[in-house]
Amino acid sequence: MKKVELLSPAGDFEKLKIAINYGADAVYAGVSHFSLRCHSGKEFNYETFKEAVDYAHERGVKVYATVNSFPFESQLGLVENHIKKLKEIGVDAMIISTLGVIKKAREIAPEIDIHLSTQANALNSWDYEAYRDFGVKRIIAARETMLSDLIKIKQKVPDIEIEVFVHGAMCFAYSGRCLLSAVQFGRNPNKGSCANDCRYPYVLYAENPDTGKIFKMEEYSDGTYIMNAKDLCLINYMPEILKSGVIDSVKIEGRTKAPYYVGVVTKAYRDAIDEFEKTGKCNSEKYYKEILTTKNRGLTDAYLVKRPYERDNTQNLETSLTHGEWQVAGIVNEDENTCMCKYKIFSGDVLEILSPKEVNECKNEIGKIYKEQSKWYLKLDKIITKNEKELSSVHSGNQNPIKLPCKLPYLTFLRKKVEFSPNGV
Image 1 (cartoon, one colour):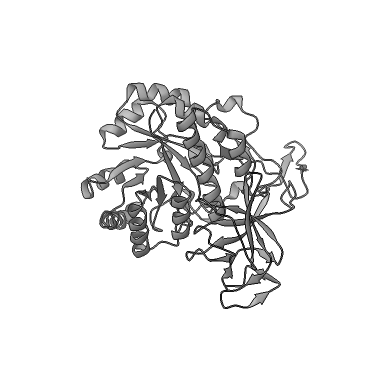
Image 2 (spheres, one colour):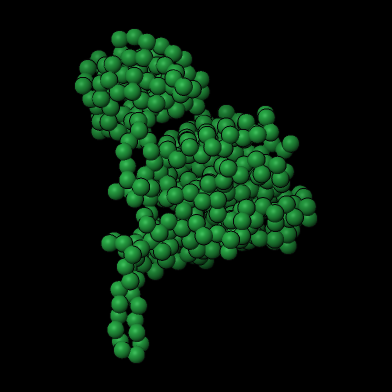
């Protein structure tokens, strides 16, 4: 069976490290130029991006640079210089949307692979053949493409790699070609500046042209979320996707997402892929429950397995965000002996452990790490800072590392269950 790549988002260095430690085979990221991830990638400059690429390569992980915006004529010189910088940095591929940028990238850096962005809307074998002949190695399928179509496309164009999105935010517009933010805020979504206008509540009015009367149409007190798409989640269909034999890479969307999201979702798909490769089966329900601990807008399987006209559950009309069931209380530092508080922790708290590696039991005066019903927990009997100060509680504003009873793997998340409203309030 074909080895399928797991591709995760890396909006900054911390998220890149988390994606890698939680099982990604490759990550995608960008410096804040000419990328549709320009806001989520704002933590990278050329120097830190080079460090991140080296970090990934040292661990056998590939890095794909996003160069997928749509440049104006006045920006072409800047794009050219940007491609030269990425060549010097040594990225493994560039994700590009337009033919002109593809051509220029092939001229400047012929040794770097070209991946066609989903924004290019490649939908059929003619498209795939044309882009292959133009030097594209991989096509990121348009989100409207069905798996059954991809199987047929691969039969006709076997020498092109196919990547599909399996998880993350969905745009209500056709393959993300939206100008709503440009109209309302002057922020061009196709240049990486989307303001997520589709997530806002809108108030609708109906006008009678004969009388001039206008009636307010109100579903909820704060408006109606008529353009708010649910988040994509195909964890339940991973066996079908893997069995197809035509998918080379499965991709997790992560623009503006939190580090916890990157870790949880990457680990869920990593475990699902590994389990299927070993046993031919996949405990999708377990991984789905884990994904539900992240904040989301409701989950849908979207269009890869069903036609759009067959769907009636792809929108969340009530709220733009459903809170996850868990809150990150802390994350383990690189020394593996301390953690940083990310929420609030009280003396005596029991926190569930989500770790990228194996965990060992221990117990001492600070607390204990133990396993119960297949899950790992940390109980903190005392909250002691690295400089030996004892506290009754600690909040996220406190930048003092908190001692652990014993070592936990770097980037381990410590989480606690929280009460939340299904309407996000």
